[in-house]
Image 1 (cartoon, helix red, strand yellow):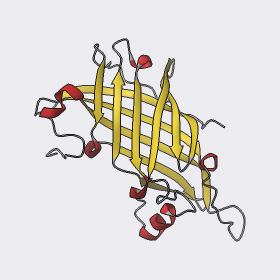
Image 2 (cartoon, helix red, strand yellow; image 1 turned 135 degrees about the vertical axis):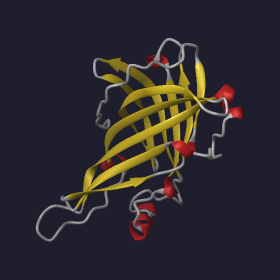
Image 3 (cartoon, one colour; image 1 turned 90 degrees about the horizontal axis):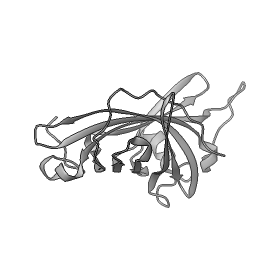
Image 4 (cartoon, rainbow, N blue to C red; image 1 turned 120 degrees about the vertical axis):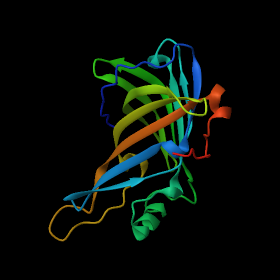
Length: 206
């Protein structure tokens, strides 16, 4: 079934008018996830680098698109033993499925803001999911590159992607929640100016 969606309200800013292609800057972009643990707390982690492209149509974000690729083996929850388990066949099985990808199929604009709908692939399973998204603004960096910021949030049920491992607790309940909250922060550089601005794996000074 399609993943659930959590919407956010966009800022009043609007992107550039002309149709443009933007390169996601991995050194200034993050993909965070959060899962309930033992039914009493939340564990957060990251997957990096965040790579991909954003195509902004001059008519507005509703006519735009985004593709994102993540390195599954990079998963980091600040606990090495847990990370090894998450990379195993019980979860992401990174040796067989090294990438997590998202490709938008449409972008909707409603009273609550923008909603990016697309195909999320984890392991060998692809499901449609929605992300509430916002355009955070546009700025020129010190090297002459044009930069833009975007945020997106959503929720998936990990079982939809074959991530079914769990463990019952002695009293009641289970070790892991099924809902995975996803939060993405993207900084992208206009492709035509990327030669002047460090991007795509080349860190900027700050």
